[in-house]
Image 1 (cartoon, rainbow, N blue to C red):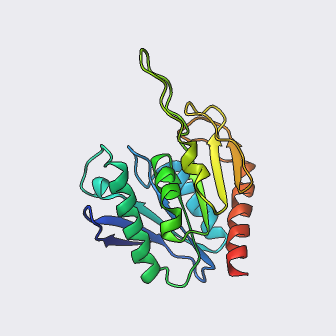
Image 2 (cartoon, rainbow, N blue to C red):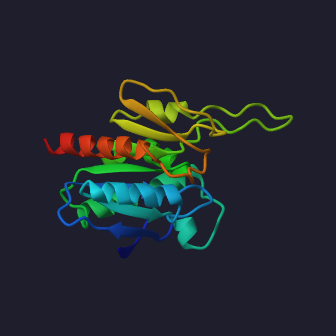
Length: 208
């Protein structure tokens, strides 16, 4: 693994590169709001993608690099993420089709910026569709619009008991239900093959 610091409009981000020997595409993943790139689901997907010949980059947002746990505002997350992907496209990932994604908050960032980053697909791990209701507070708005705005193929991997709900399928959006909740700490089991096949198919279409 190679670690690379990347300047962004909101401070340095950090990219952890897992290089495939002869990559046919790349997968760039972001972390959740309060977690890091060592989350179990991110590690599992990294292994799956590498087995399909994809180089994988795990990106730490500037607030995490600076040692803060509270996430930055959405517009800062989006700007920093876009800057990292653009940097990688010009250098380490030059010439490779790029799939983007992430877990929870990172999935939202990847969806919101899919067009700007030129992604060929988006992988959403535990997409936080709608925050659970809080006592004496109005229900939070659904984030479905962020998924609906993506025009390239999307794969959502969602725990069957996710307290944020499960997004619906759509013409270009597949939803893969796996055991567990929003943490996605359980093994993907048989669903791992479905995720591997989706990555292979999207990468293959881009090359064709």
